Amino acid sequence: MWDYTDKVRDHFFNPRNVGEIENPDGVGEVGSLACGDALKLTFKLDKNGKIAEAKFKTFGCASAIATSSVLTEMIKGLTLEEAAKVTNKDIANYLGGLPEQKMHCSVMGREALEAAIENYRSGGKKKHELEGNIICTCFGVTDKEIERVIQENNLTTVEQVTNYCKAGGGCGGCQGEIEKIIERIQGDKAGQVIAKAPPVARRQTNIQRIQLIQQTINEQIRPALRAHSGDIELIDVEGNKVIVAFRGMCAQCRLTEFTMKEVVEAKLREFVAKDLFVEEDKESAKEPHNHRE
Ligand code: FES
Image 1 (cartoon, rainbow, N blue to C red):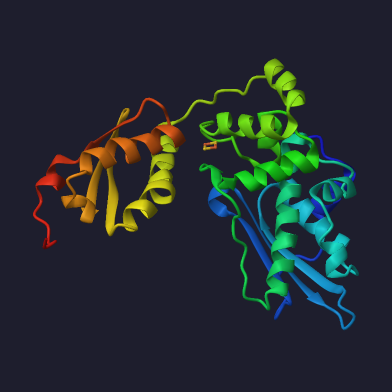
Image 2: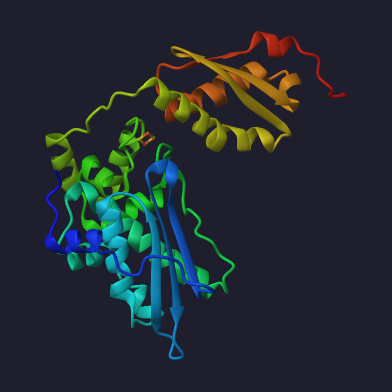
């Protein structure tokens, strides 16, 4: 059972400002149902440019509901310049604190607020986009977001980073990268703490592994192949063997073997597991194709 403050309980049992504003001035949507948390924040300004009304819809745990609810109260009456300065720490403090493992909910609130302000400033055109390179493919967290939670919350361990933005909390494949980011930002301070508390290796289930393989193909491999009019399809996973089929220009490329080892296998080993190897689906390789030289 989590140790929640009275204020968290209050906002969870009696959430304020639930819903969605019609014709809002700003909309911020962050997170995803697939990752377990999602938040949509809408606000309307008064004639003086202050936030007159804010509402939320969220999918998540008690802390996600409480942080979203309190956020809508915190920002009412603020100008956008003032609201833009609200940090995840402010949100957690307003609730009298959150369990360390739930701090990612406060980060989600801050992200939704920033996304809504950005949306307003772009005239309603801009939607939330991830900045930087994806480090944690399990939860879609970029290096920029990891750097930011480390700096703003003075984090020194991978476990803390996981608590604040979920990165590293799935298969664990990105923990080495997270460690490097912590070391780069925190220097010796991180080295000492990491030495005492090495990241926990988490067991990867078959389902997680297959999902991660598919995700890595979609995000890390397919865009490069499509840039050359090719494509790739995941056919099957048998233990450590990943069976793929090349499509389009890749299907007839003489460099298929090279692409398979140096691109596909290398990326899957980097993002999923070091013991994976890739084979081309024999049946697909025999299929005639339409490309004309
Ligand atoms: S936990 Fe980050 S890639 Fe799986």
